[in-house]
Image (tube, rainbow, N blue to C red; front, side):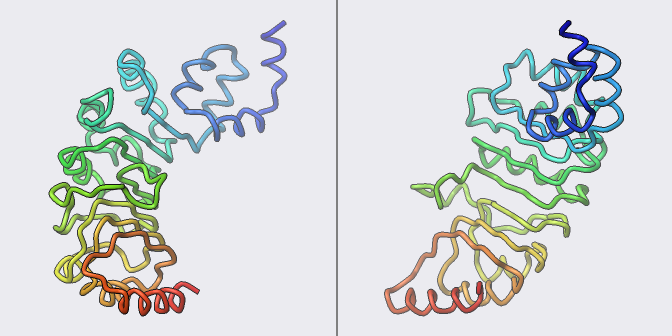
Length: 239
């Protein structure tokens, strides 16, 4: 009786479900259950999402070895844990298993890395330039506007090669005039979350990114007079 109900599910509903469920969980639970479901998963679910944050080591290995090689070409978003998590080594293992990322995840549009170390970020960025469809890159989980404390030793002030397709970027950058001059962050970027910008660099920064619609950052070297001026400038630029 249960199988007949699955057989009667319309393809559109299953595709809709795939937009909300983790794809590995979806395939693990339903692939091979019956021919109807399997055919839909194979032929119509082309925009899949992967979230490995709360996955056990056993399931992580299972997904990497048996499911992701099969569905990777249809994955558009990927969320991973760094070494500051309860599952250290996940990112390192993932990047080793799927090296380079662009070979296995050809349609990838979004990457989110949580609980990261600086070493995690350094390992990940070597894969980014080949991801020609990447629009969203988030290093960290920003439920707050900014972290409560910032360790400047963990920030990046060097140039990192990023895909020109990028439109939204959250990255532990420390912005300086030198960084702005050498950065290859596309001028088409619309949303930017960086950790630190010195007030001496902010005007040059805003001129460099004319399409910016949203900026989140900590400003250093700021005074009350400069703050009032900045508020006026931001209102003029972002409206």
